Amino acid sequence: MPSQRPVVYISADPENTGDAIYTLNRVILQLGAWPVQTYFSKKSGDYDWTLVRKAIDECDVYILLVGDGYGTQSESGESYIHREAVYAKSKQKTIVALLKNTELKHLSQQGIERLRSLHRLMMSGVFKYWNGQEELLLVARQVLREHLKPQIKVAVTDEATIPQVKEAIVDTLMDMQSYPIRFSAKVFAHGNCHEIAKQISLTWESTYVNLASVMTAPVTEERMRSILEDFVAEYYRDDFMVAVPDAHALADVRCNDIEFQRLKAFLKGAGVIENVASEQSGLRNYWQLTQAGESKLHKMLLPR
Image (cartoon, rainbow, N blue to C red; front, side):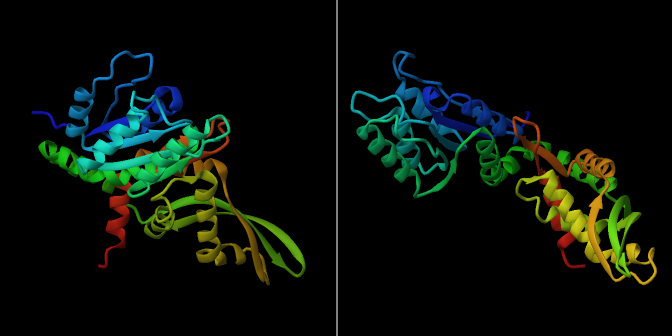
């Protein structure tokens, strides 16, 4: 029998969340789970509460995605997503609430109070606020990685050898003593500034540990680069200083852009990092450790 992916039920009003539903679905699928939702709105016809309860009963993780409003309301005045959230809590489901920091001026006073009551309900558990699409992607990925990990581990029991094979591939690709990469820096001597370029053979294990330790959460490429540059400035200072007689100071260490991209591509190919988001402008990309990358980091940090 093939293994089953964990099921994530999403309570969301499509009229108030719009494209955010796609963003959340994408994150859930990337993390190896199946998203389920009804897409119910006031134009959908009858609300099938029996079917919704059954779906929530059978899900592994329940997500409440709240957008710009309280949601389509039932005859009692309670929104359907509010009703679903209360039911999920009564069933003691693993619950994550993703609440939008929305402008309230377009809402009536009653709408504001109802929306606030829904927010307060979810604040007793795991919740995150979000503003735009990019922030939702980052926040959802970060919080769901933690909540889906136990479910994913259970789901792969029928294919127990697959993680072992993947781990062996990662170990093979990363089994090296050093990694050569080109840097430039300013070296000062006798009041003069010298621009020095050097190919540094980075000690691989310490390089990976320094880089990976901050990548358990999403980081930009600029942050990744600065970690490498700070690491080289601290531990490979003499490689630059010996190039200039009587050198007394080092500054502005810079990683060669092409070689940085090559290193990033190597880490991605090894399966230890992945691109988790990019701005619509394309100017900034966010990267994070994969589960294999976290496993490799933990192994390196174990005492020997």
